[in-house]
Length: 254
Image 1: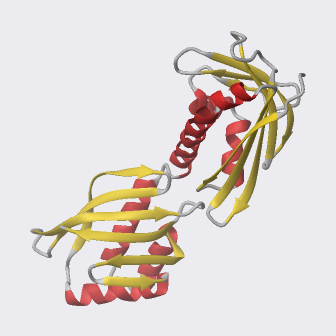
Image 2 (image 1 turned 30 degrees about the horizontal axis):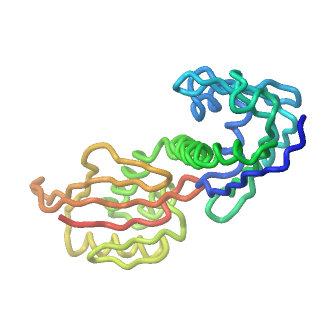
Image 3 (image 1 turned 90 degrees about the horizontal axis):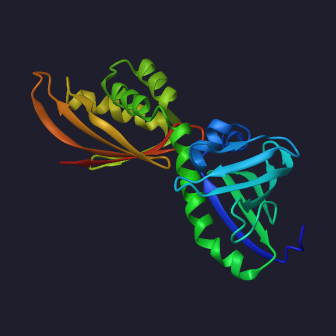
């Protein structure tokens, strides 16, 4: 390989554990979900790396090094030979566990500066796509979390309520709305109990499908009184943690 003296570096944080992120380097179906249908990867030294972009452009290379769940190195080049041919550049991706999930550090080495510069925006875009694809899988059950949250608000037994919250929310969960400024699941359990005392028989229900992007979920809701009549509506913003539980909720009424 030609000496690769020009390097492109980029770092992002993905809200998922390193093991969940690394699956996309060892499974062709996930690799294709990131790069495009027909893309494949053979996750072993010497294994083929193939990318078929949605527009039909093809890239190929081979795995140089792989160390789950933290590091993969592979060559990269265009089958057309332009601007670089197969094997004419080197991609290194390293994953590190952080509080927010996984820090991904990418280095792409090239022989020529102008070719490197051509790839800057491409990697900015592709890593953004990657973060979304991983988050969509990790939070595939976001609707179930939202429904579990609203079910907990209807639970009158304190012990059962605490169990239901534990199934969907972090012990550190925060809740903020016009009537709440709460830190921690224990305080939240008491807050819900108080709301039931002063508004007996009220029930929150999700309205429509939730909208999710990289661990943030928007879910509309309605509140019905004990007579079943609509009394209020609004939208909650849920922040989900890397392990898939609710970390915070901000509620907007009206």
